Amino acid sequence: MVSSTVQYLHPADWSGARNAWQVRDGLWRMGRAEWVDSTGWRQMVNDGVSTVIDVRTPPEIKRRELDPEAEVPDEVRQIHVPVEDVDHEPFWERNAPYPMHPDAYHDTLATFGDRVAAAVSTLVDSWEAGGTVLHCTAGRDRTSLIMGLALQLPNIPGGAADWEEHKRVYASGAYGINEHHRTSPIPHPYESYLEPEAFDRELADRLASYRTFLKEWPGERVQELLECRAQTEKA
Image (cartoon, rainbow, N blue to C red):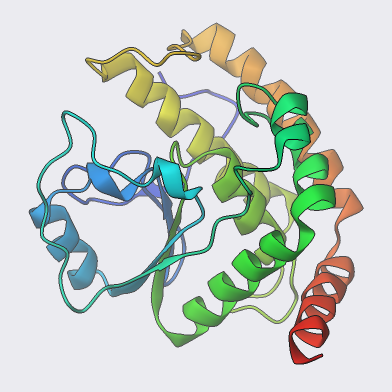
């Protein structure tokens, strides 16, 4: 059920994890951390993970009915850097029920630029220090927003990503959560599994929007965003 037109990243072999992929050496993306069981957390440590960055809003951070009671190893530092403010009513009205497409990235940046910059800075700094995992809930759009901006920067390990890499990174997150919808015993309230042909059409639409967004946010502009935030913090 993998699209014949898009290559995906190498999946991370962590017990319980959903939508988990290795982006580059020492850098991964995945869905909500509560899906990972104790064995999976230990496997993450064995793979070199030392930091897990969560960009969800506070109300999203909770165990659900089928989540395992996992023990997080002491070696793993968990950082919460929410990219959205749950109390910003106009944003949620514009993006009801939640931002679920790259079309919303412009609004997220315009509304929560400081928060997005904080998440990108945290990701880059953590990755330079050691193995890092970035996640939101599905592991698709907020994760792709932050990961995509970080991969635009020229001074990251391996240098700035080209479009082919960006495409693999986004497509993997979209494919992974679609597969989760296929196998999950609990239906999602707003999304459902897409059969291969429908998924390919949906993915093509998402990738077109994502590419437009990235063209408007080249590495130089992302760096300016980070520098502006740093100057504001010093003031």
